[in-house]
Length: 559
Image (cartoon, rainbow, N blue to C red; front, side):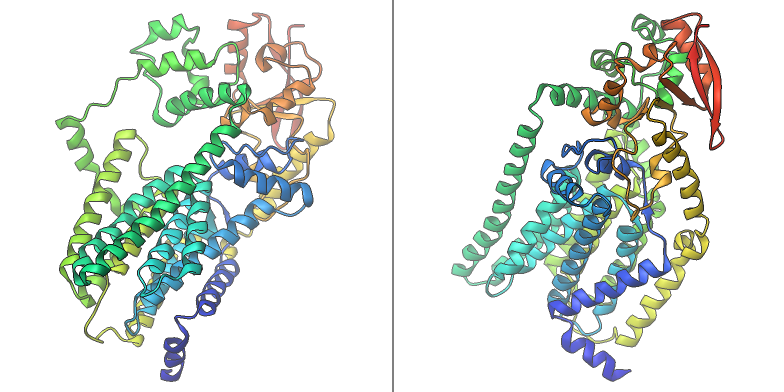
C-alpha cells in the first residue's frame, strides 16, 4: 500500500496523471450511473442546431453564437453523431482535468490528493450524470479561472497553462454568460488572497506580480467583450431583435411569476385575458401571436410590484438562508472541505480574511438570487459551491502531517458510500426501464414524423422529445418539422416557426379550426375549446381522430 501511495505522490503533478485520474472517474461514473439531462432545456438548445426542425440554426439564444456555429457545422458534417452531448462531455472532462492539475500543483501537502479526489468525485457526478448546460458553464468557468490563477502565481508564468485556462474560461462564458459572471465574483476570493500576500514579496516584485494578475484577467475580459460584440451582431436581424424583446419579457413572467389575477382582473380583462386564458398561460400555453404579444406581456410585467428591500424582505431572506443551504447537495461537499481546512490547515491572516470575504460574497449572491426570485436551483448551485470549495482549497497550508494517506482514503471511501443514498436514483440497475420508456415515446414522435401530411400541435407538453431521446442518442434530421409546441421559449424562434410556415399557418389557434391538415394533442382539451369558443369561433369543438401512445389526437371543427 505504501508503495502505491509513493507512486501517486511521485507523479501527481504531471498533466497525464490528472488526465488519467479523471478518465478513470469518468469511466466509473458511466459504468455505475445512467446519464440524463437534468432539465429539458438542453434538448431545446440541441433542437436549434441538430436539424430536428428541418433546419440548422446557430442561434442558441441562451448559449453563445460561436458555440452554435461549431455545433451546426458538426451536425451538418455527420447528423447521426450526438455532437451536443459529446462536445459538452469533452469540455467537462477538460475542465475537471484542469481543476485537478491546478490543485495538485498548488497543494503540495502529502495526502492532499484525497480531498481533491473527494471534490472531483462529487462534482463529476453532477457534471457527467445530471448534465445541464448552465451547470456545465459554472464548472468550466471555475476550471478556466483556477488554471489561469495557477499559471500567473508561479515563479515564471506558465504560458501554456494560462492560454488553456483563458480558452476554458471563455468556453464557460459561451455556455452561459450569467453563470460565468457569478463564478467570476466567487473566484475573486483567490484574488483577494493574492493581494493580501503581496507584501511578502520584495518591492519590485509586488508590482510585477500585480501586473501579472491584472494583465491576465484583463485579457480575459477583453476577449469576453469581443464575444459580447459578436453576439450582438449575430442577433441584429429584425426577426431576432423582436424575438429577443419577446423572450426577455416572457422570461420575466414565466421565470419570476405573473401578477395575481384576482388583484388585477380588470387589467387582464382589458387585455383580453379571462380566467380560463390565465390558467392556460400557467400551463405554458402562450403561442398565440394575436393574444400573447410582446406588448401584452410587457403590460403584465408592469403590473408586478417592484421588490422592496425592507425589514420584511430581509426577515424573509433570513428565514430561508442559511438553513436552506443544507438542502443543496453540493453544499455538503463544501462542508467536508471546510472541516478538512479547519482541522488540518494553517490559518494564516490572508486565508482567514479570504474565508470571511468568500462567506460575505456567497451571502450577497444568494441575497441577489432571492431578490430576483429564482434561487436554490441545482444547476446554478453546483457552480457556486465548486467555486467556493476551490477558493478554500487554494488557501490551504499545513505544517503537520496528521492527515495521512490512510485517513484520506478512508474519508473518500466513506463519502463515496454515504452519498449513494442520494445518487442511487441514477444507478443503471435502478434505471433499467428508462430505455423502454424512451422507446415508447420515440415510437410516438416517429409516428408523427411519418405523417407529413399533417401538422401536430402539442399543448402542455404531453409529447416530449427530451423523454424520447437520451444524452447519447442521435435525433434524425427533420424529425420534428411537422410538430409545433404551443408553449416554451423555443417556439417563437425562426427554426420552430418554419413548421407553421410549411402548412401556411400564422396563428395556430385560429388556423387549426376546420383545417384538415392540423391535429391537436392536448391533455386538457376543455380549456382549449373554451379558449377557441371565446376568442375565435363559438362553434368550435374537438373531435377525436385517433389515439397515439395513450394520447388523444383531436381535430378542431365547427361541423
